[in-house]
Length: 341
Image 1 (cartoon, rainbow, N blue to C red):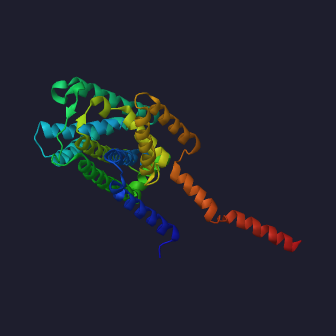
Image 2: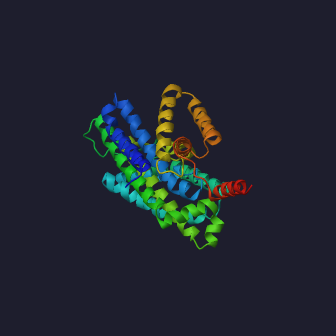
Image 3: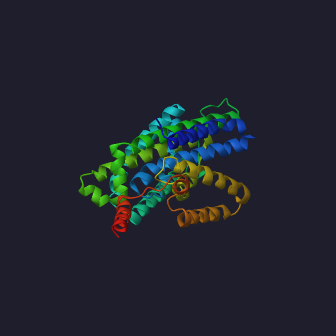
């Protein structure tokens, strides 16, 4: 029979899914619904980032590159090649996956701060390319992507894309869950804990890292492409932004990178806060200050994330502490001495 904790986790997941699917009916106006679409897109992106950040421990601040490539790839395939919207989305993600292979081969040879610098460099290079190549990408004037459902009113448009983002999020979560319980996932977590030791024990560390990197880039590109179909107006400064990658990292760290639902929880908190700060302080840079303070608080007080912190509290309050073999043996020895004495 399933344990009480398993039933509790399942109940929480079912309740969360039901609440998410009922959100469009609970939203009081189209703006709140559009904000829900933005938060759902953040949940997709942070979960996608967690394929590489959570499993391998490699911190990439450059995942905005794959958001931009997915978005522009989708838009350009529709406009230049005349493909249907969702065929363009899938083909764009496939092209990003193919491009992620040589990028991963080059960037995954370095670790730590060097990997972070390489990931940031990729975003800046792509920003310059897409901003300068105005004849093809629209440059600073942007790129207008045709809406896939032109007959829908704006609220219905938000409704459809909210559920599309939820469906993509479900696929990403399921994929992460499957990998987490596989031999491949065990190898990735071994890399995260001690890459050199994992390699010495026979784990093909580079191949495993590359597969996780490509999976992460693919899901990120799908999230970026779906955003392009929803929003419809692309700007290279916004699409190829280091802030986007920083938000992904912040969301994943806040919820807990080692937990399936950590990035999702982080996206709900950070995404909602970002939308609120943009409305209240959008004409200033205070929303960036608030985001920085939130990141500092997470690193200082909950370095493993909210979910692991709450799990520790639950375990301390409701689960009896197991006595180790060493403690039990010492207790037995003391009792034996007392009997002898």
